[in-house]
Length: 95
Image (tube, rainbow, N blue to C red; front, top):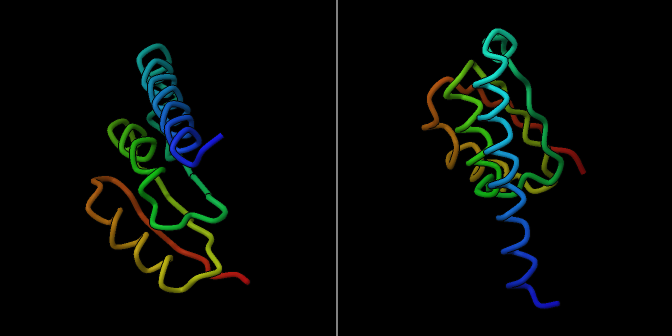
């Protein structure tokens, strides 16, 4: 399997997760009004997680905790995602 296939497969999984979260929000709106926390090991730039975070933030405040060994990747992640409304980001640098 090539890198392109794996990237497309990861994108499809994220899309399916986003749709599932939106459906959950429609059918259980009381539960989705509570603040949610998302932690991600090896967050990288945060681009792959953006769709999921945007879907969550449309419904309630979301705390995002990226955990990364690279200080530059962590800084890029925080820059990439800070424009999402209703999100708070607290990164952790761990080696």
